[in-house]
Image (cartoon, protein in one colour):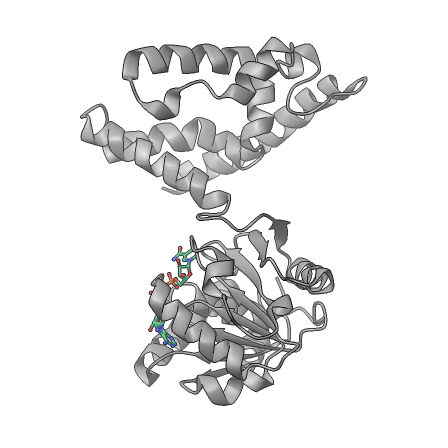
Length: 324
Ligand SMILES: NC(=O)c1ccc[n+]([C@@H]2O[C@H](COP(=O)([O-])OP(=O)(O)OC[C@H]3O[C@@H](n4cnc5c(N)ncnc54)[C@H](O)[C@@H]3O)[C@@H](O)[C@H]2O)c1
């Protein structure tokens, strides 16, 4: 990736509050897209650490041939490292809050953002779990409040969950979608509720992985190996509904019924929607209808797409094994 010369959306200047694991990655990505960034944290030491992390990331990009050497200084010169939140807020078109996951702390920062950012500035939070409406409650100009939940490392991982607050103006939602797309991301809108979409799923997965280790059935390394090389291998290409359609809703239902009977854990109770699908004969690819509808020829195309994607991934994974 060379330094991108176009500025996405109508956003020229961004302010990121919190220069930690996520915040430094935001600053790097935004600066790589010619956006002037104010990266704010509480102390010069923390900001110096963030600068070091960005320099390391950029140096590695140069080593990998993804950035010109001249691009590095341009990117770094676009980032203002500062402890002055209040003074810089009025300069930003997009403010992204990325302070620690502590509700009271975030509320304080949000009050400051609401009072000092320009009325038209998009205000966003990178919270992993808090309802955006609770975080932003009572702030002036709520039509500009839109959560954007990114995934680590944010300068690389494509998805951003876009979570409009209940007062968000549709034109601001469009602006944020256009902005994120211009940054090379895959923004996807979801409603504001604790954990949004990704973390509901991710936390459920982690809980069951931990339970397997606690029950002495596998070590963490064994769980990781099984996940990475089984459904984890597929997940980069297909989401859970596409995978259910490929496997068959009836097969899933049978597994749920057995696990519910044997394991006595409420989350293995067969989901009502799945029972309904099976009752309606919507089994997936094998019945040409499932969570998705497959028109004429679509099942064959899907099978070929699946094999092409999986062979490509297998080749990549094998290369990684050789390097390990
Ligand atoms: N780490 C992840 O993988 C990840 C992924 C997605 C979302 N998130 C979310 O992103 C947010 C940040 O997470 P992180 O992992 O970067 O945390 P982090 O602890 O690495 O960084 C948080 C930063 O916020 C700073 N901070 C605290 N109070 C501040 C204040 N009043 N003003 C300015 N800066 C302040 C801290 O000094 C710290 O540098 C959290 O809401 C987290 O849930 C994290």
